[in-house]
Length: 310
Image 1 (tube, one colour):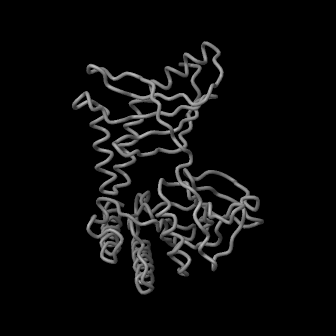
Image 2: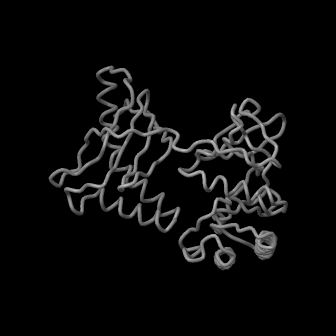
Image 3: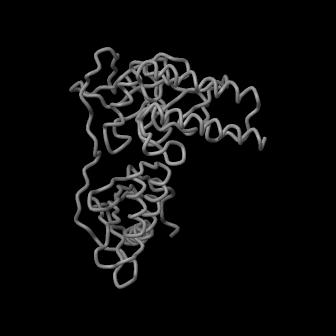
C-alpha cells in the first residue's frame, strides 16, 4: 500500500433514484466511478442498511446525518479502489478511461464488482441570468486563491477579495437560486453580502461572489462565550432575523454552523439556500418565520451552554 497516493480527491457525491450513492474520485492518475447500490438479493446487507440511513436523512433534510451516512457508504467501496489502484500501479497500467467499481454483498460477503452506470459531471448546469440588478464578472476576471470547501473558493477580482460559491456545489440549483433571490434584496451588517454573479460565455450564471470574511470562525466551533459576546451575538442574530422577516425573507436552516464570526467579533448569517437541520429546526417549520425563530432559540440555548462551561 506504500504506492497509494495520499488523500484521493472526491469531486462530489451523487444520489440516484432507486437508492444508490456514487462519486467520482481521482486516485493518482486514475479516475474511479464508485457506486453503492441497493441490493435486492441480500436482505440486511451492509450496503442496504447504510443506504436506508442515507435516504432517511435526505428525506429529513438533515445535513449532518446525510454527510455521516454517505461517508459510511463510500467507506464500503474505497478499500476496493485502493486494492485496484495498487494492482494497476504495480503492473504499470496506464489510465484508460473511468474505472467503475461497486461494493456489493454476495452470499453474505462484501466484494468488488464492475458496474455500467454513467455519471454526468457536473450534474448541475449554470442557471439563467434573470437578475438584472446584480453586476456580473466572467471567469477570466476571477483569480482563484484557495479552496475553502467543495464549490467554495477564496478569489480575487482585481484587488478585491471575495468568496465564490459555485452553482455546482450541490446537486440541485434550487438552493443556489434561492440564495441569490434573497441576498440581492438584503443590506444588513449581519447578513452576508452578495457582490457579483459570475457568468459564462452564454451569460449563464456559474457562481455568486459573496463578501469574504477574513479568518472567519463558525459559531458552532466556539468553545466558550463570555457575557459580552453572548449579549452581542444574540442581539445581532435577532436583529438580522427581524430585518429579514420585515422584508418578507426567510433565513432557513438556522443553526450555529451557518453563522460566521468576523475578526471584530461581530456575527454574519450565511447560507440562504433553505432547508433545515434536525435538532435546530423541526421539519414542519422548515423555511418559515417560525423555523427561523425556533432555530434562534436553540442557538441561544447553545450559547448559554457555552457560558455555563466556560
